[in-house]
Length: 345
Image 1 (cartoon, rainbow, N blue to C red):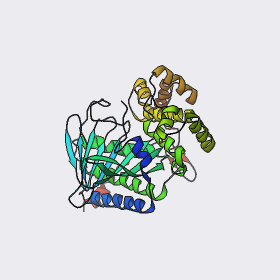
Image 2 (tube, rainbow, N blue to C red; image 1 turned 90 degrees about the vertical axis):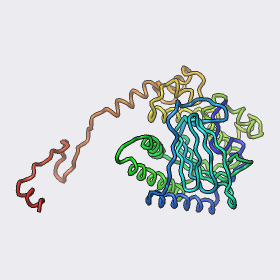
Image 3 (cartoon, helix red, strand yellow; image 1 turned 135 degrees about the vertical axis):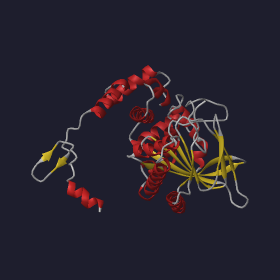
Image 4 (tube, rainbow, N blue to C red; image 1 turned 60 degrees about the horizontal axis):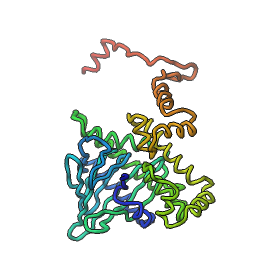
């Protein structure tokens, strides 16, 4: 059993329509409305409680990256290991990475079900509209992938929303408000300015890339499995992919997996074995060898280098003047008594 894609499956992804101009405009309007609601403290946020991550539970699935759901019409019933809740229009749900969940959807009396879902992949973000494909089952209606070289910013904001929601602090609501506005603002901007190479690919190359990005954590994913899903031969798909991209499909699969592992090493506390499994490697030792081929160091050495870099003292000057540089952080200056008198008036 492998983690499935939120609001859909690989087959439904291939049947989904690419995002048109009207759909992009609708998406921009949805995020604009969410920002306005957040600014007026009227955007309800739902986040499931922390649970043991990556449990394989019947009728549930999980992802190795967080997901964001913005409910537009109808409702979504979310089920989690310890709780369930209903998401209604003008509400947002953030599901942390690794949290098992199931979804059932319901239309309104006069309007069909519709929500907007954000997913995170290696160096890219997907945004899609979902519809009720069959009674209570959501599926992808339209989808677009966006290049996101600043993916870590999106992930940091999304993870911070989940962590802050669980806190009990005086500034909790103010922090959540700012984080939500920032995240939805970035989504709004990427729709206006984004797109990317993935959307420029056509036919089976696009579909193969989508499948790899969504299912790279599946250790059984390979060229044959992708070719079977796309209804063509292994040799044909390999040749087509290499002609269109100048990269072999086997190498692309491996590169996407290593990219995912690097992101996990940089942003999570998972151990190397957990990262290996999450990246689609059934054998952590083999993962270590492949990682070293790509990066020149083992995963353990890569993480040590990261820690060393983070702990390195600041080498640059604190302040640069026209005629000198200053490396000191500065010190508070005592206020003169007369200044205190003036300030007290």
